Image 1: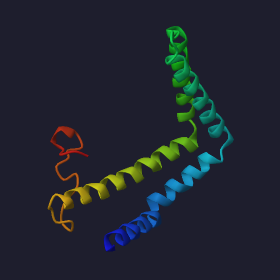
Image 2 (image 1 turned 90 degrees about the vertical axis):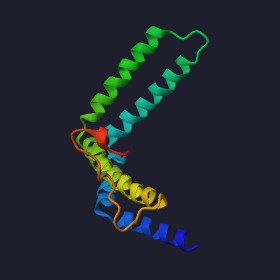
Image 3 (image 1 turned 120 degrees about the horizontal axis):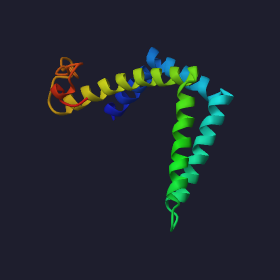
Image 4 (image 1 turned 60 degrees about the horizontal axis):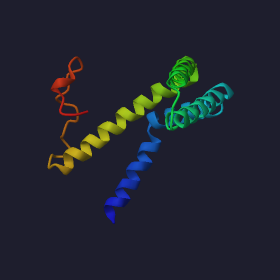
Length: 134
C-alpha cells in the first residue's frame, strides 16, 4: 500500500528532523542521569503506594493527602533538574511539530488542500478562543 510506504517515509523524515534528534538526546541524558532515574523510580513507587491506599476498602485520607504532597514535592524537585528541563523543552518542540503534522493530515481528510492548508491559522497567541482546535 503506497499510503503506508509514505507514512513510513514521513516517520523517517521525522526522525531526521532536528527537533526529534534534540529530543532523543535530551531523553538519553535523562535516562542515564542517576538522579533523574532514581527520582522517577521513587515517584513511581509512591504512585503505586498511593493507588493501593486509594483503592483500599477503607482508605486513609490523611495518608493519601500526605502522599500527594510528597509526590508534588518530588516532581517540583525533579522539574528543577537541568536535564529534565531540557527534556521537557525539547519534548514540547517535538509535540508542537507533531501537532502541526496531525493538523495538516486532519485538514486534508476533511477536504482541504494539503499543500495550502494552514494549521493554527485562526489561532491568536493571546486568545485561544479564536482557534479551531490546536
